[in-house]
Amino acid sequence: MRRVIVLFAALGLLLASAQVSRGGQGKLKWLRSVYIDARGNGLKYPEGIACTDESFVVADTGNSRLLRFTYQGESVTPDAEFPLPKSRPMRLYLNSRGEIYFLDGRERRIAILGAAGEKKGYLKPRSLPFSTEVVPKSFTIDRQDQVYLLDVFSENVLVLDAEGQYLRHIPFPEDYGFFSDLAVGPQDTVYLLDGVDAVVYAAARGADGFSALSEGLKDYMNFPTSLTLDDSGTLYLVDQFGSGLALVGRDGAFLGRKLSLGWNEGGLYYPSQICISGNGTLFVADRNNSRIQLFSLGEGQSEASSEDAEDAEPEGPSVVPPRPGLAPAH
Image (cartoon, rainbow, N blue to C red; front, side, top):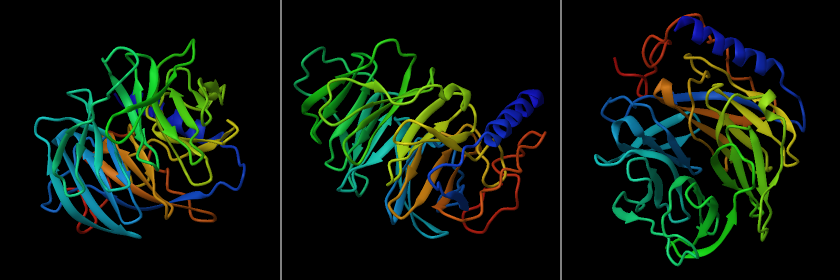
């Protein structure tokens, strides 16, 4: 096991050293980590994160619940807990009304909670022009509250309105490996992530198909599983097996890597979903470290520490002294 960890650490450091400096990409400044809820109970393998400028919601997958926190700068306050004993919440998003949509890994459907946490059932795709069987691998929501489903059964991206009514679909491109996630840009461009081949595809507004945006990313990442965009249109890919983030420009060019394998603050261990708020805060669902990490995006800020890929087994949720209020419970 130690050899495997050392190998991944070496890989993360090697890839990080190959960063390309382009376009004035800002550095990441670690702000804080969240390990526990209001009662002092620890998070367990969180796989989802959604955020606004004032709050964020966590899919605390291992504990079958959602947690909501408010934040301001480095200050984070537990706000609400939504138990989901019969669900396995994974990826999640918020719509414009603050309603919570999450992928239920047990039901393989998109479940919906109201802004106050009340259950509103499942999103039911209606009036589809083909088979009614839908198996979502992932999904996202745009600024008009339209839902985009990555449907691995029909091999299409399905576009639905907020009520589940079919609007259109975009077929998968040919000769792909395995699509793991999708995102929608500010100009309604749909991005599709092939995790196996490490290729990003794009379909502009109104396009009836995807075309390759990037190629050759396999040289810079291991297995990307999630992506999101910042306000400038830069794509942030979560390299889950490589325990880091890879950045891709709007033209498909590789821009460099951020963060690396580790258990100290600023390190990642099998990360899942990320979210970037409008105020420039980046949230990471740091799955196997059982925590959520907050970073600030910006020019000239100190880089988050990556001196944490040590030749040692992790000693619990964190290997640094606990911080008051939101530190790991022992």
